[in-house]
Length: 77
Image: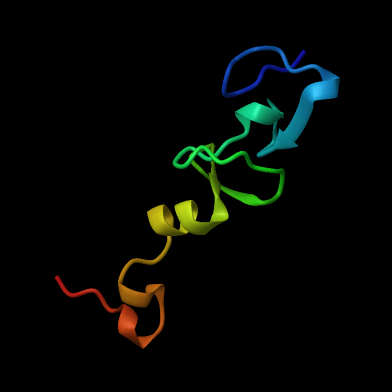
């Protein structure tokens, strides 16, 4: 019986959600930053942890700077 990577309990077939190559309980598949419940395929992964695509993953790991892209995105240090 597979174990949920979040709560470490067994995941039964009726409650299984497969994502990131693992089997999760539906309530356990949440964004690591904002805790929004995610559906398979509608999120991103970083170091094995799920994040919602927008805004969490983009804000944490996407391009930095004003406008997040384009000519105004240069960051001065």
